[in-house]
Image 1 (cartoon, rainbow, N blue to C red):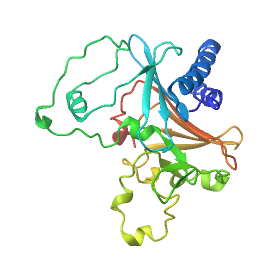
Image 2 (image 1 turned 180 degrees about the vertical axis):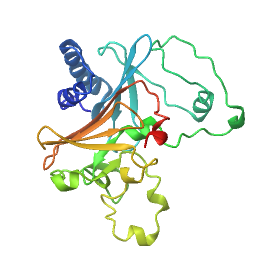
Image 3 (image 1 turned 30 degrees about the vertical axis):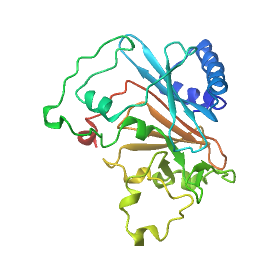
Length: 259
């Protein structure tokens, strides 16, 4: 969620019980603008907040020209001071596979590594990691250029209300996985300029997303039932859309039994 549209998104999550004081809201908006200037990012978005036991981490991401290319991530404990997060290496991912439970909310806390013996030495890759699930965009909001980079679609005027109610109208803003497995026949009806991402409709388990029409039909809200706290919104027939995550960072492993 970029600094300009941040207030709108915070109003939506407030409806889910997440409340930020006016002081925190103002600090977030001002500090993110300064982060964009100081680090020379093309855009800075508030990824969300992970609530720990002792405190909370506010996470932001800085974007370059390619919207699904490498991005920098930063965290803050007070919504004012931001620090860069290191880019996770394969070794770092493997070393943290055994960690369970909630974050402490204290950067100095040392976690005890409980390795999964059956996976030692193998790259750990969660089927649907929270980072891959959070970024959501409406179909057509981004275009892929012939040379490869992905940019915002300046001609995008929003989804119609009918299309906005369909899960197939929303994509994951990350490198596609399911798309690569489609046959040539399945790809024949796709527009390579805008259908280059994975649709939410193919996510596993089925039913892990909830679409709701709110504010008298003026706003479509998509929420994840797998990563509780993930909220996406789109105002039909406008460019307005965004996402934010406010949760504990824990996956809802009981979802398959709840559906």
